[in-house]
Length: 457
Image (tube, helix red, strand yellow):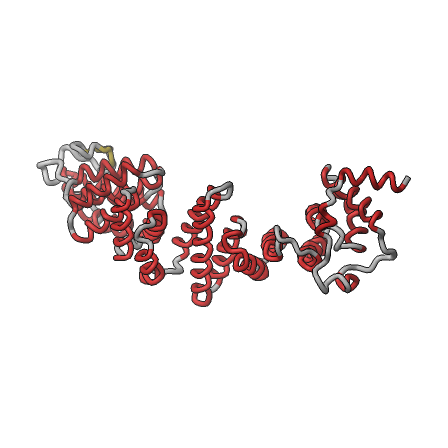
């Protein structure tokens, strides 16, 4: 009967396990030193039965039932089949999530970490090599040790994995390596900035390679590359000079690589380094190959630096026409607005700033620009009435710091400056069209309602 049962179970259990069960050379002899000793040695037939029962329980998410059979097999013959480790991870994660005490949770997560070590010990698997398992171990550490903010062990596992696997690394592992490196850097910027920059460069190149290769991982690689670019740009780890050191030679070597040039330009723009000669060089190369929104913006910025605002306006309008995302469109609209201000066409500057705000209503820069445009306007021949433009200007400055705290310092300075130009209390009192505290509509191209205010004395 036992033999018949084994035959039936073999139908459900892939025999590939036997091809993979061979322990790594020199590692199988001392199994008892790594895993807990068991009372009896299991036969091949017993192992097959336990493996099949475990598989069925895991398949139906009956993890408590699975644990008993899995534990016997794991303790006696961890080298029997790789499935012991893949199923074991699911079982132990379930145990960890359902543990009742901190001590229990710690016991289960320590077993999970050990599971990865023993998988490396007992299995040579070309499809899932040791470095792949280290990547899994790093990801699991981040899951099961959430209280460890720096997660230095995870960093070590992920880094080893990426160093060994290169462009065959899994995209989530690449992303997590940069995230962990970023957290370590933020804990001590002076000590870890170079490490973070090196990790970013390495992972960025690998994600680019995965995306360029195509296939099912390409879209995710592109998405994660954009994510780590934003993380890098926000980190402050590299100033514009440092970025030039990193990318000057890359731009020169990539004069015919449009994707690479576009990626570098976007990174420079996100970092606020669009005055860099390296950025301009990338934009020129890219625009010759194939005009894109990014290359047009780069050439536009170069024109601004040269004082050629008419050319800058043409380039940025090209960039706006070709922009792929709403975020880029809003940014280009803001830049076009700035160019119009430089050309002293304040009404057009306000029009483009308002278009940008329709897309990104919390962009305080646009409100600051609109306020400055209002402050330059001459709407009325009456010099006292014309001081109403400072009311609407200060309204815009207050709006800027309300929606965007990063603008607060600039907004407060502008409010302090332009509120000095409000009409005096005497001017308001004797002017027939003014009444302090009453609504007032500023006409002309401004066309905004505000409140009449006298200068503070």
